[in-house]
Length: 273
Image (cartoon, rainbow, N blue to C red; front, side, top):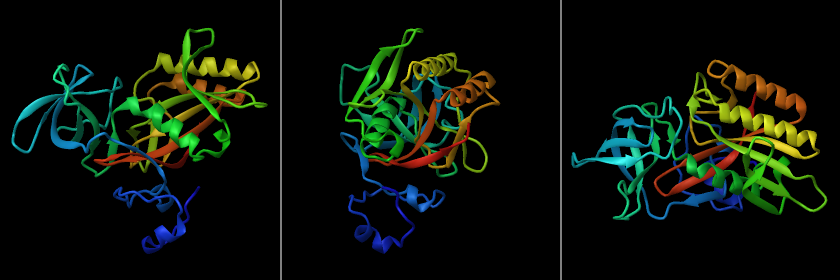
């Protein structure tokens, strides 16, 4: 379902799918603000202010009572433009006393007002739910989706393997995009990625064997309106993207949004390889 621009008063009448309580981002086109795919957090998130992120997996924050504590940061990337000191972070609390860091950083609001999901562990689930809901028409009508299936000659695991009787299998590699450039341009990767380069080689090999293969950029950043390989960061990855596209690998992007109650897959974004 792709929404058409309509007045807010008419939303419930024009859309059969439920409309959730996400705060609409006026920076993003209207048809990217509403859809039915919603992943709910187990409990509403809590907020704090970021002091610093360090050692990749840790972030010190301070809450409204001026209490400082440390969050687990589930993101192995550089997080460029996602971790400004003083920004509002939103975190989940596992209530698990056995965890050294029971609270997990989920998303952040930038000084420009953009919402950015930093928990990359949610990307694959968002991708699968978006595909199953038909948000990406070329990847629809695959009744079986398996995760983390071993494949290829470089000891890889595919994020999502789509299967259907009478159709070629479709190997989908999911990439989380949070690097914002100018005028809504999003980039991947935010650091040199040898692993990402390997994945592109594996996908090209799958196409050569008669399967389908795709890169799916999950974009949980409300300031990003389109996606491209980060030539200025990893030129080898950008070139491999061009080679992969020429070889038949498909490229898609899926816009997402988040609030204190959950994460939402919205609609496709343009990809320029």
